[in-house]
Amino acid sequence: MIRKNPNGDLPVIHETAYVDSTAIICGKVVVHENVFIGPYAVIRADEVDENGELEAIVIGAHSNIQDGVVVHSKAGGLVHIGQHTSIAHRSIVHGPCVVGDNVFIGFNSVLFNCAVGDRSVVRHNSVVEGCDIPEGFYIPSTTNIHSSSDLRTIEQVTPQTADFSESVARANQELVKGYKKLQNEF
Image 1 (tube, rainbow, N blue to C red):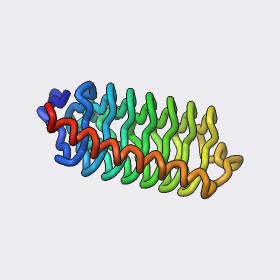
Image 2 (cartoon, rainbow, N blue to C red):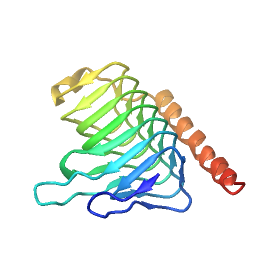
Image 3 (spheres, one colour):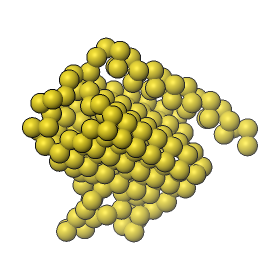
Image 4 (cartoon, one colour):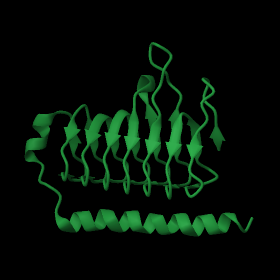
C-alpha cells in the first residue's frame, strides 16, 4: 500500500523497483531503481521534528528490504540506506540512521541512532545503537553495540563474509526482475 503521511507527502518509487502488495510505504520516502521491498515491510516517514519538518527515508539503488522489515524515524530524522545493501527479514532500521553501500544487516537486527559504514556486516539478532560503525566491520550475531568503545573487540569483515552479502544482494536483484514480470501478468 502506497499512502500519504499527515503532511501530504507521497512516496516516490522508481518504476523499476518492486514493492510487494502487502508492504506499506508511507510519506516522504524515496525508493531508487531496482530496489526489492518484500512482503509485509513497512517504510514510514511521517513523524516531524519540533518545526514540523521531516527528512526523507531514502532506499538506494539495487538494495533490498526483505520480509517484515520496519524502517521508521524518530522526530523526522534522516534515514538513508545506501546502494546494493540488504536489510534482512524482520530487521528494524529506526532513524536517525545512515546505512552505507554494500552493507548486510542480518535477520531481526535493530539499528537506531547510528551509522553503519560501507561494506560492513551486522549479523543476525544484533543491536547497534548510538554509535558509528566504521567501513568494513563485521559484527557477529547476537552482539549489542552501544558505544564506540564496544567496537574495539570487533574484527573486520572477511572476504568470505563480503561474498555472502553480495550473493544476497544479487539474489534479490533477480527477484526484482522476476516479480516485475509477474506484475504484468495480472
